[in-house]
Image (cartoon, rainbow, N blue to C red; front, side, top):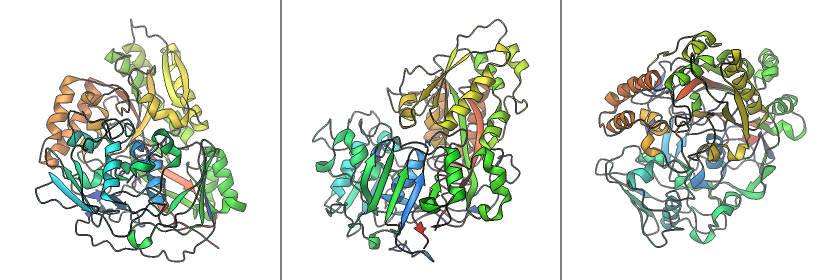
Length: 583
């Protein structure tokens, strides 16, 4: 899963896990080399035992405004287009409900649960995973009071197959419609959605060509958010979506702010996860990392009930860490996600040039700019340490500042035209881009032109095949606990399409594609896990489509009046399902 691009701390869905479950990571040695041994199994509630309503939060009260400070707008909020971690965190926490959902543990290291959200449980299969049935809860409604029906869920899922879902995850669609012939209900009007149907008002049935055990995980994404066909207004749905959660749009001014107020037709008796404590939730999209830190440190006025989305600014990290009162308001923890600089495989064809670029990158400067080991540690692999089968290796050993001499040796007799590095145009993105340029231009080995891209357009732009980026920054975390949801998504060339790509290197090697297909079809996932680790190393040693840069950590501030906050182990953001404003 994608996440918004920051200077270095780019995160995505993190299900901390072992081959059969989940585990937390501490990175206590500051090397980011693996998960600790505190392993907890992921609990999948197939029997519907999760209580509703969600238990009240101790000390919580109703009222007040929660303020969320961001350095830019969300790329997508139309649910089927969402695939960036912060939009999933805030979207599914506040206004988009899904068939299944994650119930996150307040205490780090406790079990993560996959539960029924709109559905009464996490799904029922009686044929090993080929057919899944989901029964909707009684009393679930849209913000206008209309009942949410199975037909609305099917229409929403149908949107995910076509252009109004091209930016979202594509697992279900690929499994139900392998030839990808269906173009969604706005194009193929009247045609059934492949693999998905409604049985009456209460039951959604998913039928696949092959058994899939990951379906309950896939449906935690907003692809399964219900959409009323009569209310869907194409592109306008990005800012005029209808809520199924505890909050709804009051005012949305793109690139400026989003204000949410209470959804009067959300019933807590139908919801095992969320609460509705603040009167309003306001997103301010104009606040860079430095100003977020300074405002929440001061915690005056409306900032007393504010959440800083970005990590504490580099220049304030030492101050915050040394102040016991500020440290009490830090939300921190390991975010075992891998970050990369992607090298366009079609534009940078020489493998030794790609290897030279790996040696040129100055990880130490980048980590220092991010704020040090509290927020980032160097990486060498494609998969993060918690992915099943993760293999620790370093295909290109060098100091943390790189090895310019080795790069120059690889570039002997070669000439490369100026490379274009595409980056997200925020304050942090600009600083990171400057480090990229300085790294690669040392001793005039390469020349780099910088191309800024607006934050809300970033992943859409770099995900278009044929873009003019030679190098791009990105971050990824597993979508569910399996190597397929990292290597299979990022490096399978058969999945490359015109837009909505996650393979930002446009890496397409037949031998790797074949190996990924083989691993995808293995029924023994423990054996597959080990093979994914071996394949990770093979891709980096033989083909080098990316420069692994860092694994990240989270270290952000909340205001003095924010209660119920904890770090989401899934999205590396403050979980807002239990949040309240203190008196």
